[in-house]
Image (cartoon, rainbow, N blue to C red; front, side, top):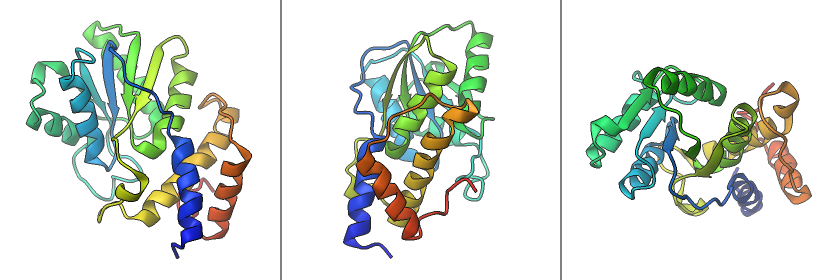
Length: 215
């Protein structure tokens, strides 16, 4: 049940997951695939604003899209960008990855194959996955400059019929758990979690929002 108390705790997680970076001119815009096409729109907007000369979409079918779609996330995202006016020659597609670690690995291989060596990246992700994306990329690409951004949507306005508030909260809880446990596995750099955010996370788990936790 989504009470006002649950929403207050969820907002704490939402705010924490945001890095609040301001996009700056970079070498590459890297858009991470997901079930939310608004992420593709954000990446295309940044390209059309002239913030980077190339736009990469990375994503096959992940844990949230394998039951929804038959074609890879990156292919769907690229179609969104083309429809918004991004020229096809500026778009590169990596459509095999199934998680953030593979996004990085396979995108790195794609760049090598194309003879591209960008050092400054704008990574585009869902709002509640900014921090985990940053922590993961910094683990694998520590020497590269990295800004993370997402669709500019308020917490209250983010849920849709396809992405209801219950799913948003469950995923935010799951991503916070990963921020907690993945550094010890070598997947991410450590990120400080304020006590108030930790307490909100624990209350949400007790309230039943545990569907995306690593068991």
